[in-house]
Amino acid sequence: MPSEQESTTPHSHIPYGTEGSGFYSDNTIGCYNVIQASMPVVMDAINNMNLDAGKTFTIADYGTADGGTSMPMLYQVVKTLREKYGDALPIHIAYEDQPVNDFKSLFLRLQGLLPMPENNSYFKDFANTFVTACGTSFYSQSFPPNFVDLGFSATAMHWLQKKPCNLTDALHHTSAGKPEEKKLFMEQAALDWEQNLLHRAKELAPGGHLVIVNFCVDEKGRHLGNTDKKQSMFERMTSLWKKLVEEGTITQEEFVNTTFINYYRSVEEVSAPFKDASLPVRKAGLSLVSVETKVTECPYWARWMREEGDAKAHAKRFIPTTRTWSNSTFLSGLSDSRSAEEKAAIVDKFFGMYEAEVAAAPADHGMGYVHTFIHIKKDN
Image (cartoon, rainbow, N blue to C red; front, side, top):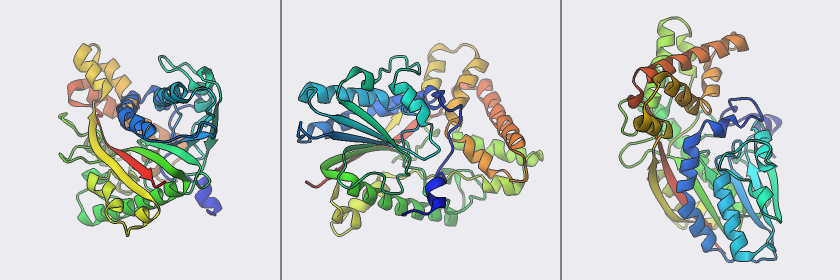
């Protein structure tokens, strides 16, 4: 059993935005598009399962955040199952995330109490459907053995269980210049990936499927915020955070302590635990059905290129999609000798600087998504 510290401390980040407001999904439009791009893989998994209509079919959504971005996909899955098996099949959706997650927004969305344009609630529209939530990290076993028929996770499992080290010259491993630091991140990511898969192997029912959509560095070296735009998101973040050091707003020690605790695995790194039948993940019954990379365009950049308009208004819309997941990393890098109000003001200033850069050259900035789409099956 995990210790009290392990069970209550977030492994990655604390949500940004008012609890119950649906801020994450409302400001992370690109994630809807990413999850919609996973539909062929999800439907392939569904179509290759032999279901017992008298037994509850359980879907687990790992790293769900406030639930909004996966809801259209889950709606389509529930609809497909209803069309194929009728109302007699009990369907259970189990949401997993950290104990600090905004589960309040999730349940408000499901009950139709939080506005969701073009995003209906499957819970309200389909009978014999049940919903639960689990506040146990996916770095532990989150559900009982043989419990999950279909597992799904999008843009979550790049977060690492712990920080391997501080990056001394960058904020993110993709921009780090010191090989020894990058190596520590790579090793932690490999350990975490195997551990994660072994927990999922216990939870999946025999014949169950798992679809994971995860940030990656693709075969062309592209990754989140670094696709075909003039500016790279993490390089701009690093440059602006360094500027705050130069002007005396933060210290060099605070800069070094600001490190994103995540890693973007390549296809080769994703595939490694499945390469040989003697490896622990294969022995646990999991096999890799398919893995591919896809780039999903930044919807904010695409809207600007299509419509242009007021550059300042565009920048104000764009910046929250970079902040929903990064805000707590910047806060955590600041010294505890500072008050919470001072920390918040510094981070506000940083994002204001970023917003000004985007407003000055909107076409140069975007947060394009680069993911691996991974399909895994457990032996019958």
